[in-house]
Length: 224
View 1 (tube, rainbow, N blue to C red):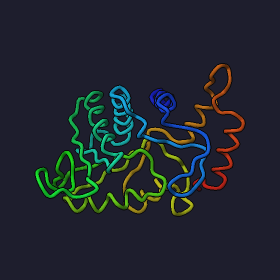
View 2 (view 1 turned 60 degrees about the horizontal axis):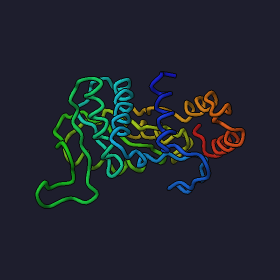
View 3 (view 1 turned 30 degrees about the vertical axis):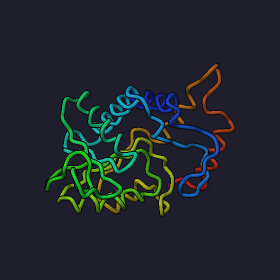
C-alpha cells in the first residue's frame, strides 16, 4: 500500500472521521463503521484532505481534466480543498464547481457555485463516499444541463466495497451505467489491512470483536 494511503487512514482516525461502532446508514443498513467527511473542520485538516484527494486524482486521471465538481453540500468544501491541494502538489490551476440545492435568481444567479461550465470541459466529480449511487443520479443531469461537458470520472475518499442496487458495488454500477472511471483514496480492504497491522498501547486496532462485526457485515452486504 502506498505511503499516502496509510497516512490518510491514520488521518481519518485522528480526525474522528472514520468511526467504528453500531451505525444505521441512510440506506437503512446497520454498519459497524461510518465515515463522516463533515468532521473535517479546521484549515489544516482541509488542506491535508485536499492534498490526499489531489494525489489520488493525479494517480488516477493524470492532468487530463479541467474542473473538480463537488455536489452540494459536502462536496462543496471537498472540491475547494482538492483544487487547492492540486495546485500545491502539482502546480496546476484546476477550477472548482459545485451546485446549489436551490437555483438563485439574483446576483450570482443560477444553480452553480464557483466556475461556470463550458462545452468541452473535462470534469472529475468528487464525493466523500458513495453507497447507493443516488448522488450521481442527481448530479449527472445538473452537469449535462449546464454545458456539453465530458465527465472523466468520480473520486471518493473511501470505497465501502458493499453492494449498491445490485450484487455489484455502487462504484462498479456507476462505471457501467455512466461509462466513467471511478476510484477512491482508499478502500475498506486497505483500511482493514492497516488496522490489522497498526497497534495502540500494544493492542491491534482491529480487535477480534470489530473484525467479526465487519466480516458479518460484508457477508450480508459485500459486493460480488
